[in-house]
Amino acid sequence: MNKIENIENLLCLALTKDIGTITVNRLLSHFGSSDNILGASEEELRKVKGLRSNQLQAILSAVKVDPRPELDLAADNEVKIIAYDDPLFPKSLLYSPDPPYMLYIKGELKPWDIKAVGIVGTRHASRYGREQAERFGRDLAQAGYTVVSGLARGIDTLAHRGALLAGGRTIAVIGSGLLHVYPPENRDLFTEIASSAAVISEFSMNTSPSRNTFPRRNRIIAGMSLGVLVVEAPLRSGALITARQTLQMGREVFAVPGMVDQEQSQGCHKLIRDGAILTTSVRDIIAEIGDGKEAQSQAEMEISPSVGAGRAAGDEINTKEERILAAMGGDNFHIDELCAELKMSVAEVSSTLMIMELRGLVVSEPGGFYRKI
Image (cartoon, rainbow, N blue to C red; front, side, top):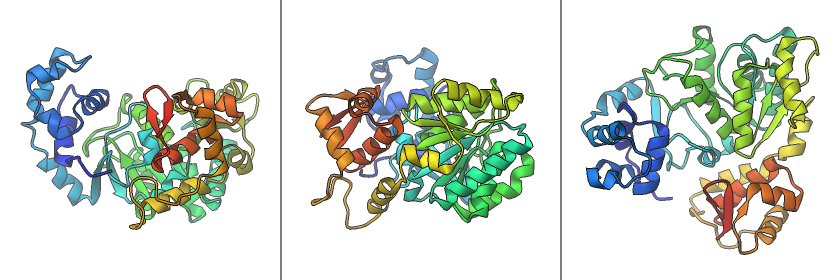
């Protein structure tokens, strides 16, 4: 994909009140680029469905916003800001509903972070939950996966630490700007993760954490992951929100069983009753999503100077891809229909389709549909 986006333009939109991510994504879909959005007339903006009058006026005023203070603040704190069309923007995140159009990064993302598993759970973890979170973080890292979590107290913290102890990669997605480490006692962990992999946020540098920012953080954890593991969670838990978001993206949810008389286990047990994969070891995860070698191989090809943006001449189609292409025929197919037709898991079909789109074999359509190119 050719670089079309201007970070300054996107910041003008992001820093303007009343213009949220859904609105910007709708505008980008309509106009094609932030240049065109900021250059649009009021008459042209009125043709965009769903815009309220206050949003329309906010968009017209966004061109007056000065993004330089935010850019300077990011540069002073060694934070990169990348747009959705940047080669290092997480590809799997682009295939999620309402994706962020811009990310702030402290550290460095790698193309092979596409081989990622999320780990989430309660802040008030039991000793058992803490042990399991660290064990799965460590074992996933040793198996070559990037562990994605939210830097929160409890399960998140232990999942990150487990991956670090194994010498693997772990990415923290935070529900605040990168100048506001939350919880504050995880500042050293924040620094360690940023030094070895990355801490990311979609929020401007000075955004404080709030009840509204954490659900948005959770959808990024789900969107970056081939599947999400819930280690320990009560029935009312942000981890269950992340699990729902994961399922809505057509990806697999895993849950660790806990002690039957503990409140912290009830959310995981409900997930298992509702169809989540009962998970006692990393082998259970790999059995559903595969070893991730295809995703990692494709990611490495994406940064090779000898490989273009589309499918390279001579690329071989593997057996999974052949089956999917045969099932699709000449029609648009929904991912659920493909899973039923091929008797493959949602996670397996989703990850294969993502790789196929990167290779120029299929293209995704709104609503979870895909068609052959």
